[in-house]
Length: 484
Ligand SMILES: Cc1cc2nc3c(=O)[nH]c(=O)nc-3n(C[C@H](O)[C@H](O)[C@H](O)COP(=O)(O)OP(=O)(O)OC[C@H]3O[C@@H](n4cnc5c(N)ncnc54)[C@H](O)[C@@H]3O)c2cc1C
Picture (cartoon, rainbow, N blue to C red):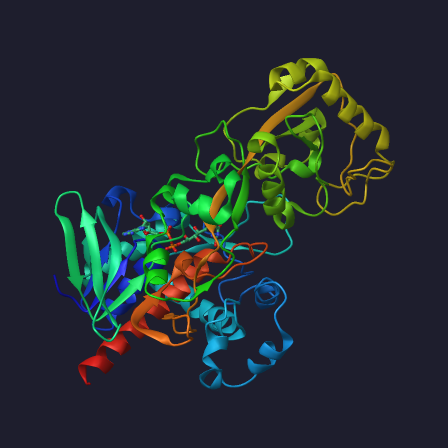
């Protein structure tokens, strides 16, 4: 099979690339592992909150937060070199795994135009948030990620993109010079198929659906987590691996993923529990292990998930009493469809949770004794804290009624993995030597972009922005090689 551009993956990144490239005149083939009904990977399941107070601006902290999370400690001498024009950077700096300033600015400045592009496709936006308390405003497309996937896919179908479902890209085809000239794929009906092209866009998501890669990069506890929604099961990391196999530069924190706190009893996608600040978290040993009220929930939920993954069996229980019902709209921070487990006494609850009643009793009573006077305000950091216990609670510390308790189990779920490929601001994939791999582009989770804590509500935007850049710039590349 021959085409101009092959796009791998039918999430927001792949679809944005395919539509943009087709509109610029290229012939595009899109490969997707799933069937048509399940197309869209993670993108299909997200509510798609965007870190934007309105449709034309990113949040005030957008660039700063991304820059602060761009790696560990970066050599200041290297950072100085980023003040030169990008074209003059030494190759070794371009391939360095940090999220460089050019990438961050290139991302944020392209956001408003990307929203306008979606609006032209008929997507509508509203102000929205999944949190009861938050540090920044968000907007979301009406109909969430599914509306994005179906809206862009329909436009791409109309524009002439050729979709091949149940077709999985496995490796890249190179010419003698090492330029990328296509993809080798596999489908259960046709077996191996080679698609020859002038350029390839990798947009096949992260590797949260691949147990071997999760173990290799995230570590031994990775089997205790699971994708937060079924779409993640389709993202098995081939896009990242096939590029690394031909010498692509990695970027992003390979041993980390965006973590969410979910109720493991629920089969509902994204059955999150974000109200841990209003109770205490205990592990299977009946012990507290972190400050549940360290900050607002949208700031700490990822840290909470990661701490839970370190606990025995990777599970914790949020324990509170019926006072939680006095918090207006508290259900907004609770997306599970399962009711909490109720206990008439600490002992009763402990038996139901299969926790030693003596240990649980000691933990709750020590916590209750440490709670300080103060006025409780669930919507801000109220400073109502504990004193005199090893693990403090800094805000919202209320006594737990020993005769009417509730518990919700929580595990750490994988939203998406952080490790991926280093790209230029034009979404070209760089090799380890710091040079562009001719013919290879990437968008979405394949682009390694995050370290430490995820900067919330930026990853769908990143998929859309770098997907569009990959689509448009790959067409320019095709024209260049045609004209010699
Ligand atoms: C429940 C949930 C909630 C989220 N909430 C938010 C949010 O509010 N805001 C935000 O910004 N982000 C959010 N995210 C993250 C966000 O959804 C993703 O970062 C983004 O959608 C990724 O887009 P993508 O196109 O890179 O990957 P995906 O959407 O995962 O698409 C990848 C596609 O590639 C296909 N594929 C994989 N491997 C191959 C292969 N080898 N060959 C062919 N096809 C392949 C997959 O089947 C899939 O269709 C959320 C994620 C989830 C799961």
